[in-house]
Length: 90
Ligand SMILES: [Zn+2]
Image (cartoon, rainbow, N blue to C red; front, top):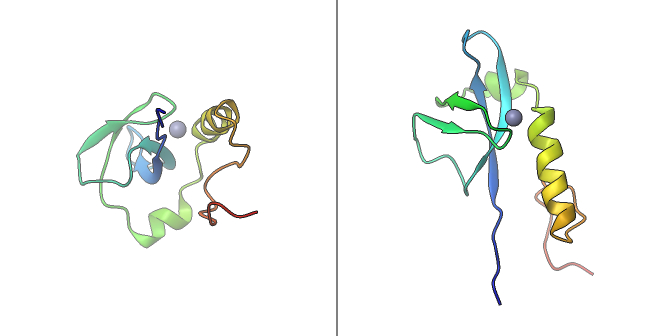
């Protein structure tokens, strides 16, 4: 059996102007400190350690959300991710 893990994490990143922040999803377990990566929605993002305020203010990227939901649905996992709730519940 092949289990394809589709893990992702969310991180607030600045756009090119540096003024607007959006919370994008990225592939992987967690941010490992890399300076840049491509988000799930295909945007090259410069990454930096977000502050509490960034987390609070950055709106979640709708494209990333849509894509992840689509993926999860396609994988037969109807849960719209992200709640971090328990797995294997009845
Ligand atoms: Zn995105």
